[in-house]
Image 1: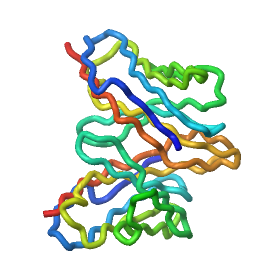
Image 2: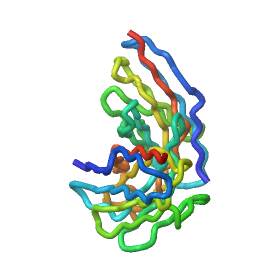
Image 3: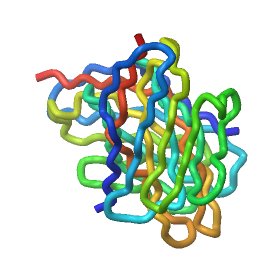
Length: 119
Length: 118
C-alpha cells in the first residue's frame, strides 16, 4: 500500500519548452504532496508543498512562476517547469504523506522521480 | 530552521558486518520526526525507518535500527549483518510534526555513500 506514481520518469527536451510532471497517490488520499529537487551527487532539497485545493507553498529561493504546482485532486499534483533552460536539468521527485491522526508516523512515500534534461 | 548533518561522505564495509551511519540534527521544534531513506543508483527513495521525537524506545525495522539520543540530537542508523544489496546512498531526514496531524516537508542531510564489499 501507499504507492506514489510519478510520470514521466525521463524527459529530454529543448530549451524554452515547458514540461509537466505528474505525481499520483495510487491507493491513498493525500491532501499534501511535496516536490523535491536533487542535483547529481547532492541531497534532496524541498521546493514546495502542494496543498489540495489551495495554492502551493514555495521554499525560499524557488521561483513560483517558474515552477507551477497544481494540486487539483486528493490523488494528483503536477509540477510544470515553464520555459525550461539547461540549468533546470535535475532529478525531480515528489512525495505524498498519508493523512492519518495526530503525530502520524506515516512516512512520506516517494515517487520514482523524473530525470529532466534540457538541451 | 532545521539542519541535518551527516559527516560520513562514504563508507566501505565488509559483507555481514554491522554498520553505523551517523546523523546529527538541529532544530527548535518541540515535535519532530526523524527518518532514514535509502537511494540506490536508480534514484528511488526507499523508506527505511522512522523515529518520533516523543518515542521513548529506539525504532527497529528488521535489520535496521535507529539509535536515538535526544539530548545529543543524534539519530544514527545501524544496519546489522550488511548485505551486498545494501550498497546505496543513505539519507537522514527530519520534519516538524503537529498535534493536529500535519507535518512539514523533509529536510535532508547530504547523505552517506555506503559500499558493501564481498
